[in-house]
Length: 173
Image 1 (spheres, rainbow, N blue to C red):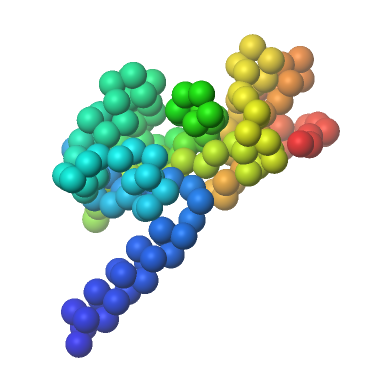
Image 2 (cartoon, rainbow, N blue to C red):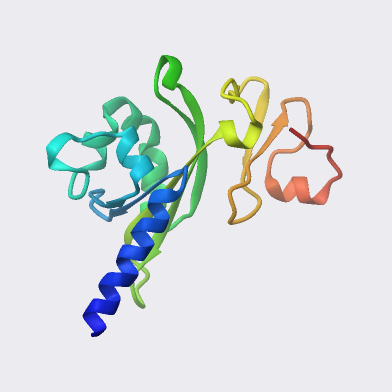
């Protein structure tokens, strides 16, 4: 009965994750996929082998992996990281906010895996044309655990979320 309840709970969680419009995945400390929701699997088709057990570098490609590797290293060291990146080409192009959340094991705190959440800018800004331009905007990160990003015009003298919270700055979409 306990095993059946556990299977039902896991199935329910997968069903919920598959309904989300964001890409969600879980990778172990060796950067092999343990889970990926439907949105993630559609974005990175892996053929008949499936994504579970596949290496991150093999799934997302060498170029994308090279851009994201510094963030993966920080997350594997136990830091929650949020950054922006670009995905796709042509009509499939989009800017995304990516969050890596480390999962620590027991008392020693060693990282056993990472939750990855890729949120496209389009739903946040209401247009697929939304772009992050590092020359014109300063990327400050997220002020909370929710999906919320802070970008400021390059001339605003604020360089961190902490500075933003200490000042009055007009923000908007």
